[in-house]
Image 1 (cartoon, rainbow, N blue to C red):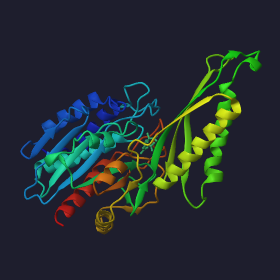
Image 2 (image 1 turned 90 degrees about the vertical axis):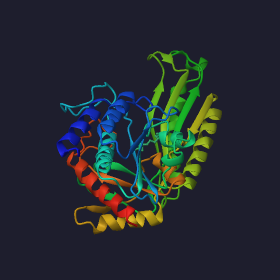
Image 3 (image 1 turned 30 degrees about the horizontal axis):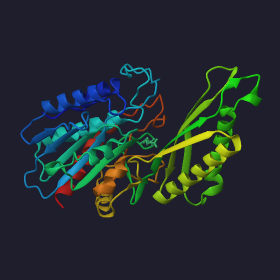
Length: 382
Ligand SMILES: CC(=O)N[C@@H](CCC[C@H](N)C(=O)O)C(=O)O
C-alpha cells in the first residue's frame, strides 16, 4: 500500500518526538525498521550491519538493473532543548531534530514505499545513516565495509532540508555544495588557586579569553578575503566557583572551509596561535583537530548536470540555484568514494537549522518525494 500524505506526516511527527543522539538512535532504528517491514517485501532485501547497529540498508531489486543507485537519509538528532511548543515536540529533554533529519527520514521512507510497490528498473539502495551531526556515520559505514556486494551503490544521492528555501523547492549547484569541517577541541591546563592570590596561580580563564580573541584574527587577517572560511567556538567551559582561579578550561568549536586547502590553512594558524598562548601564559594548551568524514561536499559534474536538468525542466518542481553553504556534511566523504549529488529540499521556516524553534513546513515532504521519485525514474532511463 502506498502511504498517504497524512500517514507520512504522522510518521514524521512520531520521529520528531523520539530524537536520539549520534550512534544512540535505537528507538528511531526500530521504528524505521518496523515501517520498512510493513511495506511490500517482494523486491526488498533488508540488512542491519552488526558493526553499525543503528544503520539500516534496504536494497530494492530492479527489474533489469544496469546499476545500483544509492539514496541516503541521516537519522540522528542534536543536543538542543526544543522550544516549539508543538503538540508533537520532542519527548526527550535536551534532544531535538533541530536539523530536520525527521524530514529526511520521512522522505526516504516515502520513496522506499513507492518503489516497494512499483519495481524500479535499476537497483535502489536506501541507506538510513546514523551519526551525521558528529562521529561521522557516513565515514564509519564506508570504513566498516557495510557497502558490500549488492549493497554497494554505483552512485549516491542525498538531501538536506533548508528553511531558507520555499517549501518543496529543490536547491542544488554544480561543484561544491557544502564546506568541509574540522572539529576543534582545546584543553588549557594551568594552575588553580585562591582568587585573592593570582600571583601564585596560572589562570586559564584569562588565557582562554586571549586565545578566543586571537582565533578571531584567523579569518580576518590570515585568509584571502576572496576565499571563504569560518571558525566558530560553540562551547567554552572553565572553573567551578567565582573565588577559585580556574586551573582548567576547554573550548569546543568547528572550522569550515569550501576547499581542503582552506581547512588545512586554518588548522595551521590555529596550531600556531595555541603554541603562542601556551608560551606567553606559561600553561599547557592541547589542541585536537578532527576532520573525521566531514569533507567538502563535491557534487559529481555529470550526475549533477542530469539532476539539475531534470529538476529545471520539470514544471512541478521549483528549482533554485543555490550558493555554496558553510554547513558541513559527512555525505562529503561518501561523495568522495561514490559519484553522486547532494541537494537541498526547501522546508520554509523563519528559524534556522540547529535552532530550538525549527518547524519545517510539512508540505515539503510530499513535494520532495515527488521531485526525487521523478528524478530517480528519469535517471534509470538513462
Ligand atoms: C547540515 C549540518 O548542520 N551539519 C553539521 C555537521 C557537523 C559537522 C561536525 N560535527 C562539526 O561540527 O565540525 C554542521 O554543523 O554543519
